Length: 336
Image (cartoon, rainbow, N blue to C red):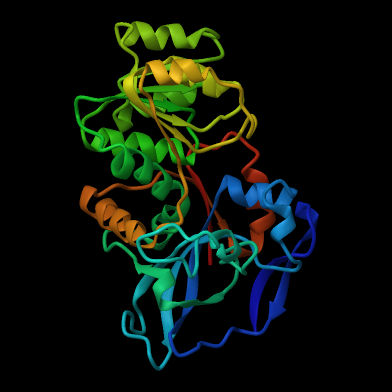
């Protein structure tokens, strides 16, 4: 038997620690002793019933992002051996190199059991080797937030040092976006409602800071910084009415990456403005097998170190979730 946290219904009070059988490995599977788990906005939305509620069957084990050590391998496993350090992927059983139309049926942490357990069994194709320069805690933060930022700016964006990037907020994806943009020497404009958070960003390579609360017409400041040219890349994490504001700030042939829906998943936009700017728009979906492996290689090469806000014990998972509602700066990690 092993300890695990199961969600028995929607609501944080329905997240319970239970004893369940330790999973057994199949021929092409590995048994992972989980060492660290990181929480995402997706995990909070699942608890609240705001993320694909019709696909979930209770009870299940939440969270998709975790790292650990291989402690047993199936008879036909070729990619890993006992004691290898590994990281999960959000999408299990996805097609190599392509988007899988059935991917949402195979996501860890809902509807499939996820990483909030002492042990997890996964197909060997659904894990990747942990970069040698990262701790278990740091590696657990990569599967969603880092991959989302990397797909946007590196894979689709082909970001270069002469580009200007607008990073909205200081959430997990935004912080990885800042680190990636800084690693290539791009010009970074960051927005936040917190002067304290903005002050922290200077050490991460941000060149311009805007508090959108004290400067409600902050888009004018962006245009001023860019001499009214606009920005080349925008990580759009807010959604709703904010999308039109982002579109207005794009430079000619600028790229906008649709990532978040903190305000709303529905937006009214000026299509003519998109067309006139020859804007390039990307809906970011992390259901890519081979690209995920490439991202891990890049993170290792760039020597990026994820920003961790706080670390909680496995017994204090409810406290960790509650901390997501607070004024965090960096990832919330659970350590076993």
